[in-house]
Length: 392
Image (cartoon, rainbow, N blue to C red; front, side, top):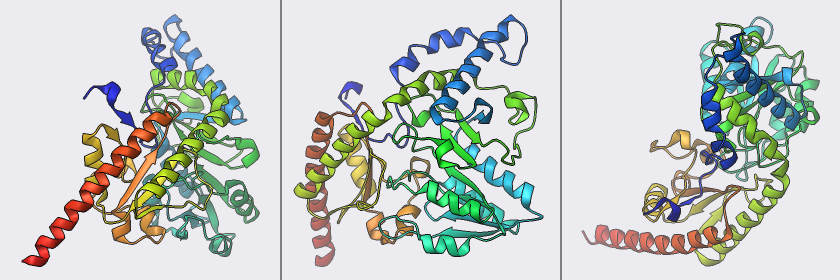
């Protein structure tokens, strides 16, 4: 099967590199100097980093001095959580995060618990909505940090970050949000949100892997996790990933298209879900009643094994997911879906579809027709297997 015949519906895992980025990469490769060098060879790479920082700061309505480039969302999440713990361990020892955070957040908090930290995990209901009463009840003067993502990578659920940050600040706590999935899908004004920290990954927004950014609000306490030279104003040691940062900087001005692209993706997503609900029996849309990222649809298909469905669609040329890409290969059902109250059987019958800026209606319709045929075949096979088991 030719690459041109394949259809990619897994943009929450990663996005294809935009043409405006790939066309510039050869010229960036010519600027191979170390951006920390003060001689001629380092000047151009340093300017690329400076411009990328300015572009991102402008897009997020913050100061360039509040942007730290790093390797991506996981590093940023770990840096903030571990750093706040290190800075406040003698004065505050309580933390809050949702039960459906990215593994880089959940696992970091699990590690802090081994060091004596108290962590409360905010429950969500079957629609993915946070238990606000639980949140308010557990906020206290001992809370050092709250970490709640902007949009969930599996279900697309959007959380009321501005409201939650206000409550955290009223209790004297700092607020961090994993905004990796939000970039390019919903408008982001960090000044208006008034959060203290935010994390981003370039490869979730049509640029290169291995590059990300961390927003640290002016005057917010910060403890670096990588020591070395004076890069990033002494806040993140190590020679910068110049190619990745420069490429990210090229893509950032395209964020002006977010509203238009979000509307297009939402229309396609709604068209997709409407057809699936009408044309395939036993389909449920997870978190359908909640505000969601415009490109994300999490489905449960009754009497279908998600992994088998994924492989069958893969053979037909469709790239989809059963959950988070960073958990691929894990036989256990999605912790996010289980936290929402879905049964193990339902979670193992899940399918995540995430559209992109370039996804077309024709591609969506082609996927629907293929999915219908695959579901019928798998259910028929399941019925035949069940009959054989009963006849033994």
